[in-house]
Length: 384
Image 1 (tube, rainbow, N blue to C red):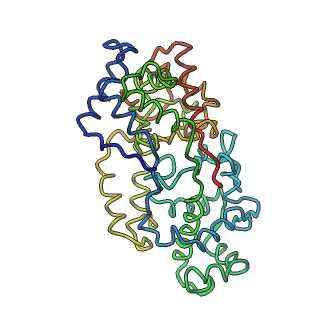
Image 2 (cartoon, rainbow, N blue to C red):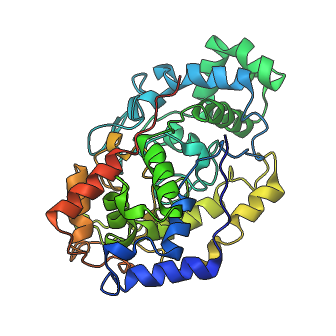
Image 3 (cartoon, rainbow, N blue to C red):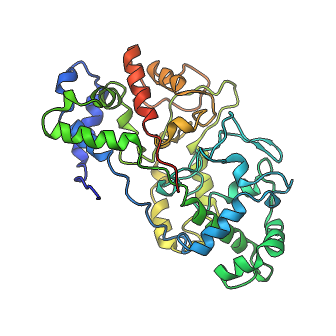
């Protein structure tokens, strides 16, 4: 049964953020959760069905899904003949367990993000340089370091091995498609159709959260088994400032002050904004099935601030599966991630200015353990 909670008013969101920034000195565990915190906690509950993608008319097409599934593991798509989408995004985490992934031309520049639950996302790649799930696969396909392919090579593979599948979806054979960019866009659209099936939800976290909400509404929050973990997550560690809503992400970009470990700094969202605006395959372009809707997506990016060195807030769902962590894969374990936030970030060798919400937390060992338990509870049931 779908459980719905009221939309959180903006004044309550502001109140919650202000409260957590001021720390917990004004209140102990016995007043948790206050009204605003309970509203935020209720907002974490119940992940709905993935939203539709109006910019891809094939997003939920079964034939497109099936072709995408075949292409996902086909190494013939790469210029070197040894790399597929699956190479960098293998099950069950749909990312690699190494710091970087190995492509045709060497190591990837960043740690590959997991593809689990990506239909819920608003931006793709760590820097948001792609604005749709069908646009995203073309970056790795054409990147000389990753799959080192081209539109002509894609045409050859589709013609030789998938011509009838392609024709059944798009009404013409791949060799008869005069526009190579249309061929690329159609590749991206069938890949989205497949990736929309990579869903892992219904985690122990959801079950515990539902029980806690019931307890809190009955005035019994402190007696609930999930009380300690949520107190740390929402109040002490301030995770809910950015990891909010049922996706546990604000879909925004933040500079965490994470050291790059070298002088070659990654500037993240700042160049990503320019890339997505100029991308011929963005959701407002001629290959979109809803350019007006895509233009609405892109309308606010020119006004973004604090983008230098900022990276996308990832979902925390299934986070225990997806290490190593961060855009550069520099934090190997959940313990390392918690330690990073606990010390208030790193002191040097990162681009931009660290967001002011990243400050030392002074968590005790037991609080760190409680936070880790909560993160581990976010692993969802495997997709059938």
